[in-house]
Image (cartoon, rainbow over all chains, first blue to last red):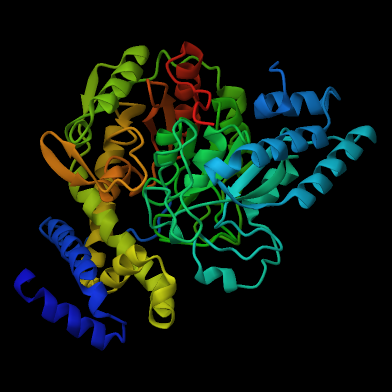
Length: 59
Length: 465
């Protein structure tokens, strides 16, 4: 995905009506790169199909 | 008892006020004087609510003269991170944008509870913009500064809270902790900090960051003061949907209970990596004092940190999406760029992160079948220099900001209660996390108290002011 990161970033900004000035692109891209790298680490973890979300929970 | 109200603990102030050895007004004036004398350097306060504080203190003194009961924090000055609603102030949450909000009509629940216990609010505190920060720096208000060396970071995002308590401007401050924002400034500024169990303390009328991970809690210069504040703030609150309906469980009466039978373990693996020698030394001192030799592994801690990162950046982006579109140039550019990137992270990863969170929580809770307390570093290093962007660890240059919280994120990710205890190393203090099972703040506080009694943990006098 990294090869297409600029394309993805530009498309996402347009699709979501997010501002993305040229001066911001390197930092946004760097942050997105880190986020997607960490997201892939999460994605690599096998979870069962019936895994439930823990968005809000109590003990 | 210490000599002046400004150097007294919250417990000492309340005791003296209750017994008419000291007036609440005198305690308040002492705090206001110390703020006036030192905040030019520390930049901890963004608002000083002097008139309100004097009125509240006067009311407490009048109640005492009238023979009415006053609370356990009678006359104790405190301050709050400026994401807490304070009646009459716009809740800026470290931002420029929020200054345009109307004044808050009502205090946050935790302020109301502190004041119901007799405490006196003296102001609101500097913080990283919208709490998306580990440094304590703020482009709009300037950085809060470390009370032990003003050229260094306070840590964030509750930087003003760490600075105000570490600098002894107030004995107690309130902060918020999403990924480490109470524990990191506690570590850098040499204070005790409590991040309670997720859902324990109400977040009502505070400006959010990441609803799935946000906690509020106190910072103080002693464990007793920390527990006094925590006890005063407990209780259900219908205004925070995450706040559990559970009766108050006082911890102050339990602090001196023996800890000898508690099973204490050291977090291994992930938590013993990426550490400067100071962090290793601090954990070793605490472990030795507690007789801890066992090591436990929190499974998949690196992945837990990654999942916390994803949930944080996406929920944060969702919260600020409209502001990003309408006022992008009014953000701290670094925060804006992180949030815009967060908005672009596909939702599938957020869903997986939340599902992983449940798995991870279950696995970590299994550890608490065989241990009562887990020790881990609070930060990988002592306070870096303001503006420092990288450090070299094991020969590898790493960015400072995202790496400050790597040892706190896997813990708050599943809402475990933690007391960060300051180990007074030279020349700068550094914190250790005392981690307990959910709803066992009492255990973490007891261990912190024991460490304080042994002299292993202590809030050092501020040497930078």
